[in-house]
Image (spheres, rainbow, N blue to C red):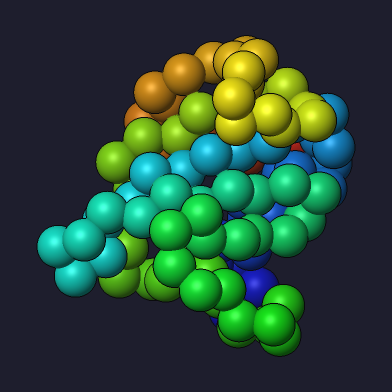
Length: 99
């Protein structure tokens, strides 16, 4: 479980606290947006469990795109570092920071 996609993305934001990841996923044919910041994940469209050990990004989720946003995140005026990253491109960034 420590190497799950969600955990790796959380570790990435722990190592790069100046970034927020906004992940668009599809779960059971429904879209969701998940924000990952400083090692924690939260759904922007569904209830998020109070327990941080309950994964927000489920293993069966299909990642559609990832946006890297400068923190602090302002949904009214996000400052994009990079927009629409594929999971394959994100994996290179994960390797770069060692997660």
